[in-house]
Image (cartoon, rainbow, N blue to C red; front, side, top):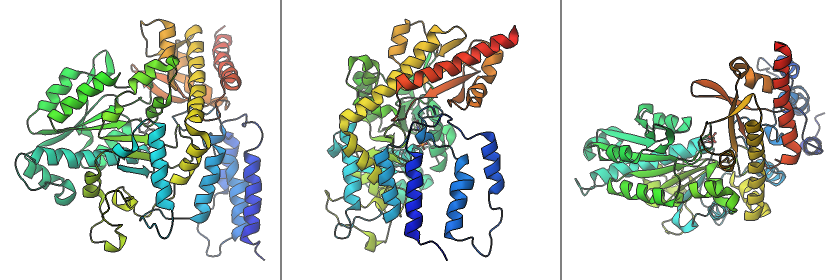
Length: 506
Ligand SMILES: *Cc1c(COP(=O)(O)O)cnc(C)c1O
């Protein structure tokens, strides 16, 4: 006899609470033995007779789960900007699964799911100091990559319409005509994406949307590649036959640096873009959260976040610094009419939600998916639970740890902080957000550094390249971060790697 489902759920909830009790696990990764054991137990072929509910759950929990890596439970997981998941968000996410509610059409007489999504998005605007009424096109996505696709899709629609406005009274829409016909009618040969230090997903979005990866052009200054060369930007915008989307990286994944440095620069950029009918998209996957900070200790970050509200569209990630489970990103745009032109499902009157301009828009007509997960609920839960002060405190703890790591790197012979500056050390430390990039000064050690750190299983970092050489990166993004508990572990691992190298050489 099968065990009834509700009993299995009870057992599952007991084991989930066990997973979340006590201190974080000592190892951030499963052992290589656990990985190969689990791999060997995977079913290799579909059986005609299933093994049943109880055995399949046992299989997942006992055979496979020991080989999962639970970065949300591991504050010492510093690879990529992964974020964690707060307990309240995890609970809400489990409810989402249990209810299996589709958030596709606004059906106010049937469910409040779309109300929750809309409210979560406006609370999120408030958290990040964006006036909700200025961002009428807003939606949760599966992540920042998806939000970047929305941004470029809206930008593409807008810049073609702008380019054709002086030629014809008929609205030229890419959504309607397709990109080739729309560009021909608008007299445009090229859509260029002008940016600096873009995340790889921007090129991916350009590829998906038929703009092409080569349309992404980096206009950085020679000795500060993250900063726009304004002369070059102006020249590029002026090019006849070209329509432009300007993409601003508000905190780059490798170094954490911001592409713009304040309100004035953003105002200048806005003016230029208005002059040439360009669209401004901000990729602030984790950088946007710098807008929560208020203390002067973070002035370099808060300044860099100023003026982002002048953009046309914005990408943010919720599964990173908002600390909700995967998959959750968000997209804000000022242009409600563009949303409908790009994403409207045609001839689906039964899906329409009316024409009231203030009504909540049916998500299926303003984003990628039709059927959608209720991913708004964990966000709503977190925002209600922590509020602005809670998130500020969480982020401050993450910055404190990042700056602690940076200080340690600066004062330790054998490691060097990147990028290299002539600036005084304290100033360098005060510009650190949640990313710390560094390398070992010894070339041979540097080549193995990331693997040596990972092999300890105590902390996890990701590898990247800087100036043509391997480099190592800490990305701090977990709500559990506690510098007092975590910094000694990091120092111990990094120190041991240096000492080990000396003992090998002598
Ligand atoms: C992480 C990240 C992305 C991609 O986000 P996903 O949520 O992984 O799709 C895009 N841009 C930036 C700046 C990022 O940090």
